[in-house]
Amino acid sequence: MSELKTIGNKLFKTELASQRVELASLKELQKSISDIKGGISEVEKRGNQLANELGQAQKTKNALGDSIKSILSYGQFTKQQIDDFKAKAKDLGVDVSSVKELKELEDLQKSIKDYQTFFNGLGKIPTF
Image 1: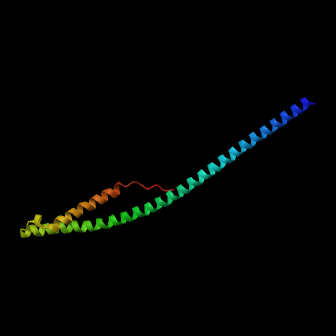
Image 2 (image 1 turned 60 degrees about the horizontal axis):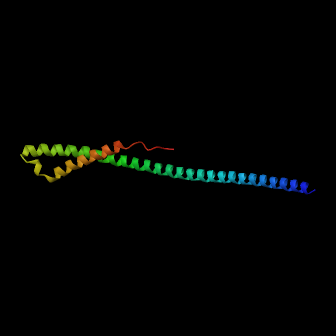
Image 3 (image 1 turned 60 degrees about the vertical axis):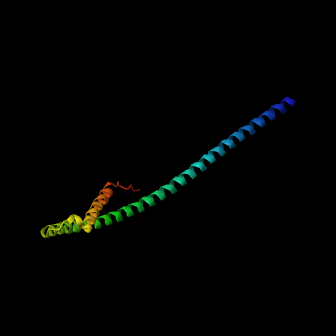
């Protein structure tokens, strides 16, 4: 009878150990599921944030393009003014190198070209 009791205890302990292993494995699976869901949630949150910021960046880039188009049109007009001024000054025998406003306009013309080059060098902003 004591052998039967010993065998019964061992079987009972084996069943309990087996159930504990199953519960532990199940808890690990549940934790993995929870961790992955949390990670996916974080990825979606960051992805949405990035999409919003890229959308805003595109709007800002478009506004910058509009501003550059505006100064380009000023630049075209100013180029004509510079050429006209130089021609008139030459007719009058005036040395244009002493006219500081002319030098400033020429410097601004260069800045306009630099901004246009910068803008043209901007890459395409990705969209989602």
